[in-house]
Image 1 (cartoon, one colour):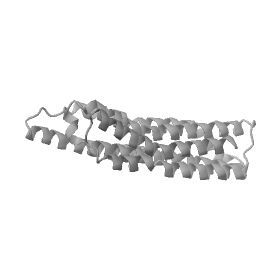
Image 2: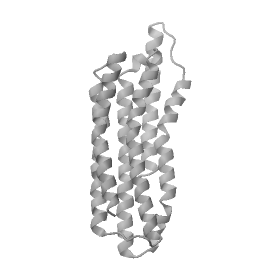
Image 3: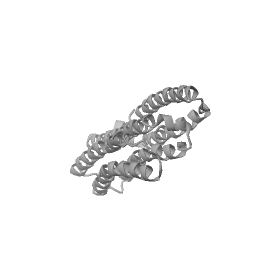
Image 4: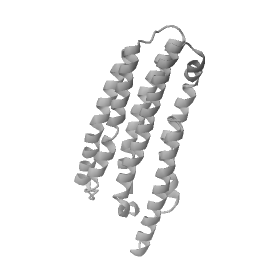
Length: 225
């Protein structure tokens, strides 16, 4: 559910907001006598937005052997696997939701510029929050690799290490809030010229620091499994 349904719901909500935003841009451009952006551009935004859903499906497929082991394996091992998979899904779901939130804040604050030559710069700003999903993917793949080793009998899970990983993934999930927070702060900057554009990127990257810290904590905890 967390790997697929959550990101799918977030993508659907984000796509609906983008469709509404596109309509506002078209009406605004028409009222000023400008050429409105085509609806074909909406497909580009929607295509980028589906990335978390596609990655979630990949993670869900890779997690199926572990899910089957939870149902048929020893109780102690199943409990550890269940806890790891649950928090791996929560981390990915949190990253997907905060990515959509940050992207919509970035886009909505700059709707008038969507029909100008600054559209490419808005696209760059819009893609930056996707880093949260990539970081969550890295953590989840690491966890799946460890659990696969346990299933093959080449590794043994330590319960205290599993709890540490769960706490680390919780910290990472909270760290994903850095992107929406920084995107909200950057809304005040409407100037997309050289200096203004660099200031917006800097603010977004400051928000990413929490995410990088969460990634480091997560990787360290996973390494102790």
